[in-house]
Length: 370
Image 1 (cartoon, helix red, strand yellow):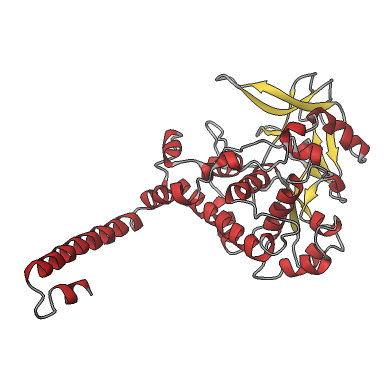
Image 2 (cartoon, rainbow, N blue to C red):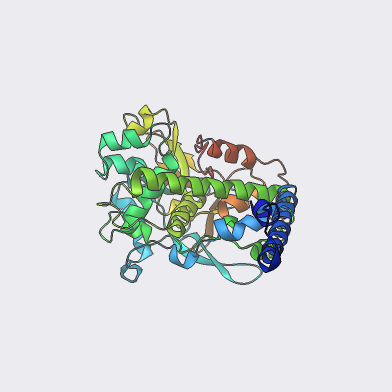
């Protein structure tokens, strides 16, 4: 249009014609430069991924922590007592700080007394865990609403749990308050890092890794938009103000890094939708860190999560489990850490992300990342 009106129109001469022609030259130059940059970016996954990360997957994380009135939170030391009162087992465990070999500390679950190898360190009943079933059993949503939300084209089980987590996090009277207050303010998953932080971490030139986190970030954006349309914006009585994308990312990162896969309870709406496994957030059990030489978490028939001592433990020693035989891409994407010298090179992460993009994500086993 610019060229036709500026040059092709008879009589467009003089000062006005000169200005129009100059504008057309500039517009053409900008279009050519823009097209060339698109072609360059589209031909290089690494550049395409890093160019999109700042605007799409770097929400204001300081605004993501969704726990209401955190200054009124109860002590996390009460979690063990709550597990026992709920019918669980606890052989003397508590949240503790442990030292890193390179300096600094990290949080984990430790023994408060001697625990023998193979002994149950902690067993958390499914009724004490937070899951998508809580939306149905807790009366947050009617059975009809849950059924409609879980229909094809609606929410998946992961997104429903994220919404339930945000709803409970904003309720200072929640029955999960002790557990919710034990959750971290921020989990350093790679989706929320700037390109500078990713390159500094040494994975910035791994195009496979960047493509994986870009795809996973796309899943997060889609889940937030879908949850907003189907639930967050519709139920203003539950969500007076829609949770921000940063808060959605916080809830999602909690589920990805701290949840376990357990069988869906019989007779629930979730089971009638054909879902076989579901994510659960289990107090104390979600604090156990990874050690490839340890044992996996056990899941009893009733859904109880069981953490066993992998060796004889003394007081103040850390209790660990294995998250599974995962490559470093999976460990970094789901939990925010890598294992130096990890011999595992084959990754199931690509298949997991592909299923999530198709809306088929289900936890395959206890500790599955999606």
